[in-house]
Image (tube, each protein chain N blue to C red):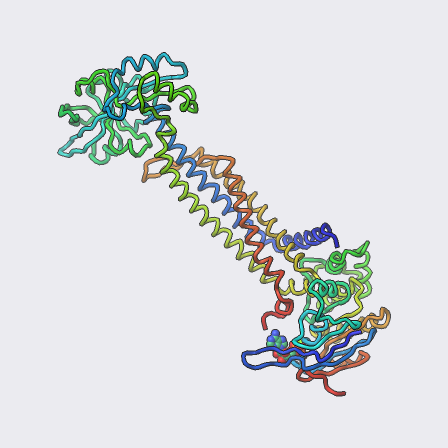
Length: 394
Length: 221
Ligand SMILES: Nc1ncnc2c1ncn2[C@@H]1O[C@H](COP(=O)(O)OP(=O)(O)OP(=O)(O)O)[C@@H](O)[C@H]1O
Ligand SMILES: [Mg+2]
């Protein structure tokens, strides 16, 4: 008996089996579908979180290239000249120098140490999106000298509202009363914790600094060319600590990697759960077929054919379930992309991202485990002792 | 055709050994219709399972045309069951996802030696008197009809030997008689060797010979 006719016979029997046990088919289909969809959705959400975090970091904190003072210096000196050089380089869309100093904010008898970020509102508009992240109130403008913007955690911690007057003390001891013009929420936890934004001209005055910067953010036409610009900028500006956005978000990404791992663990657990139920359903259905397997053997069906029949059934379930799961997972991820949900804890919108690899990896693992779940009872089915199978374990 | 030598099967039930078959020596001729009778637990099913190669003896030999079946490889046993034996159980043993005709076709598909399996299956179903029920599922057939399909299935690959363990045990008198007549006819017209286990004196009476089991041994007539 040839292999092909063997297969045909196995197919014939397997299909009859599947058609007959519609309920079992439905159970297994649902179990695998949900397992597959779940894997996709969780990975899609963690991807979304990671990508959002990276975007937010670039947009509010680092730009595409970040220029820092040399290792032994506190500030970049001669900023004016350096800015001119940046301006003359092609491929650089915008740049913005910021001053970053420590300080203390006081209001209604409460005090909190903060990080004061001084920036040029006009320049920032070209390079970052922070002023689009204003939760309430208004963004800074270059003309402001008595206004500041505070991050939302400061607002929460100190019960400050827009329009309130607060005292800001700079690290050199200077203090001044400022009006809180707006509350900002950038989506980068480190920034949102305790940052106060003030216009750079005002800061220069308070700090008595000229031509200095703590950091210069640079925006390129193409963020993927950052690595190429890095050495050029280093040379032209005669500065050694120049970092690409990739290097900057490394930390973010490394924490995101932990998040991905967490996602993977959850995926694994839910896949196991889904596949254990698949295995149980297939197993039970095979146990229920013990007598039938015994009869098959008694009429001369080879073990290998019995194995093949159940393998075909498991593969069929796997394929059907994976297709169902792919469609479900795809639909849910696309939905979440367009309808991000609000997480009150992080006060962020969590949206998923779809990537074709999600489909692929979820399908492969799901199909693999489905088949494995079917193979084990199938091997057992083939091995079953005829007498025990037919008459039960007397 | 079939000969057993000191065929013995023992089961361990805890510390007690049960001798289900106790040194059985018997020979069954080609074309013989033999009935196996005896009280419950006397070893009839065990005996039939041994010569059907569904089970292996503890000791002794089973010879088919001089070949020791206990020494055959697993593959050879499978082929033997497929091509030379037909086995009919007391309980209804059809594949319930297959129709009557598919049940009968299935062993032919396995053997792969029939050019027109469904034509042959139809013929066989007609032989067993089910010419009008080709496409019924087992659940749509009466017990007697199911047993007829099982017989047709057992005959699918032109076996030499038909083994039946109380095939009429679950049937009423009328169906039971019809089935036995069918066996008788197959035996007479096709020269099939038949070993039939039964509790029913009337069924046993139709056979050429009756052997009686008692406590794993054959009773002297
Ligand atoms: N798997 C087993 N384990 C232990 N004992 C067994 C097993 N199979 C059969 N026996 C014992 O072997 C003896 C013969 O059993 P067998 O089934 O052959 O009887 P039987 O003549 O077919 O009875 P019945 O007419 O009730 O079908 C019985 O005592 C039974 O308990
Ligand atoms: Mg019995």
